[in-house]
Length: 238
Image 1 (spheres, helix red, strand yellow):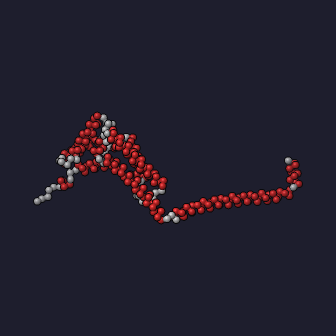
Image 2 (cartoon, helix red, strand yellow):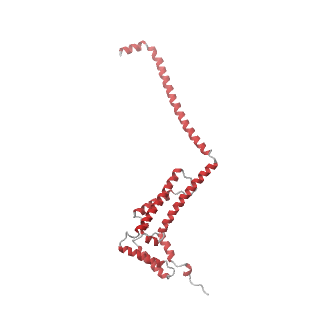
Image 3 (tube, one colour):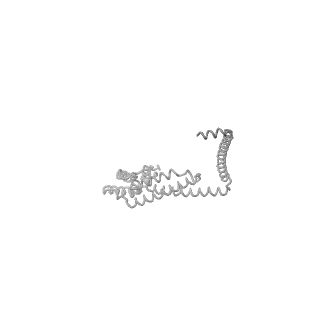
């Protein structure tokens, strides 16, 4: 340690130039770091601007063609979505089909529950129109949801047609059978209005507690049971 101090004492005049060099190096390094960071920011900004300009410079014909392609794909997806919904409503609004294939209206059935969940997802992702501006990710998500909706419905329908009323007891199956026979009378235009009304009420009684019939299905059935308005009008005086 004493030798180091004697050396420094003998060459004290070197200390100040060295401090200047260190200070200069530090300042140069700080400036180099700042300049490098600035260049990186400028490069990022330039790339973003170039991307925006490229999008704006896209030929009108190409842009219109891409928009039409997306709209066509979206139209086909929405048509497929609507087709599955129509097939579902054929069961949901037709009491005769609900009696024949009761699991289609039972949300406690695993396959029916899976279909209803898939329907909810597809409905939530459905765009307002085929002209909606969806990016690639949103379009792919909706496409997958519609596909899941189709598959889930097909599986639930096939299972419903396979099992029919096998999940019911013997007494419950007899009630379903009576409901089917009474329903034929209720919608038979050759029967009297009174006969049709009595049959309709007995259909409701037989199905009570067995099958969940929606209000919309009841409304459709009541329109079929009610005699035409022309038949209910009193005859006009001669």
